[in-house]
Length: 313
Image (cartoon, rainbow, N blue to C red; front, top):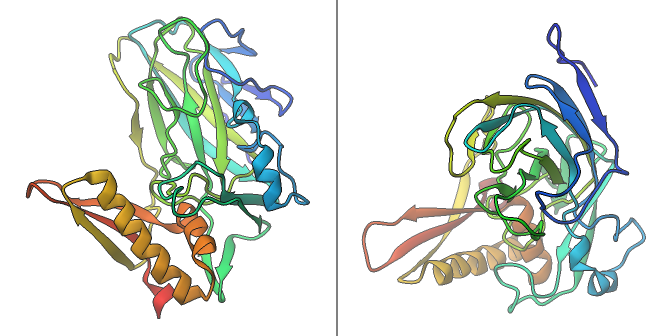
């Protein structure tokens, strides 16, 4: 990795052996840093190594949910107090040589339609992945989990996002982005996890291309910043850079409109790639873009599930 170190700053390192499994303000920090320091965090994959290259779809049935989305950290930011804001600048994201995606029973927007299990492994040694039928999509490594310890005592799931951040799965948290997090307890106790080589907007089936990753961040502190929820500054380049086709869902229930749009996109994708519907649905978490197109003409919402138009050429 190349160095981004400015004069006078330091870099800390947290390896893959450093991981824990619940947000907790009483979790002891693994490292203390000064504002302006860099940290390299070696993230485990979202399954916490419960899946490997030899795993099968049946392996998904035995996944321990308490092990999912392990956290690397916490990082104690010196001087951080409730009411302040921690800024996390993503400098580098380097993914492993392989990853996985799949349908985990009970998880995903269409879990009742596609109960699974299904598992697909991906070669990540290049700059793009082959989604099928000769169609390649460029990878866009991102971090799914980034957050701080909660204001309330106790242990909280790493899977559920909150005002403290956590498992936000925002595909725009890539190298070049900055995440602003409210400090809710002394030191902040910043942690990261759940890296993806590629994710669609919405992570519709519940997984993206899950993988291990090495992430370098620069941590800043804004005294009295006063945020009550995370704010994301996107990177210098757009994540979606090509013409798209949007499959619409329209109706008075936002959730059902999302499901309708995803079902229509699944059907079209399966036909275009000549795969079965479950395989196509699995791909939605990786390349689908779920968007609210229109929200003001009540009683109906208009939602679109967008896919690269060249798939249908």
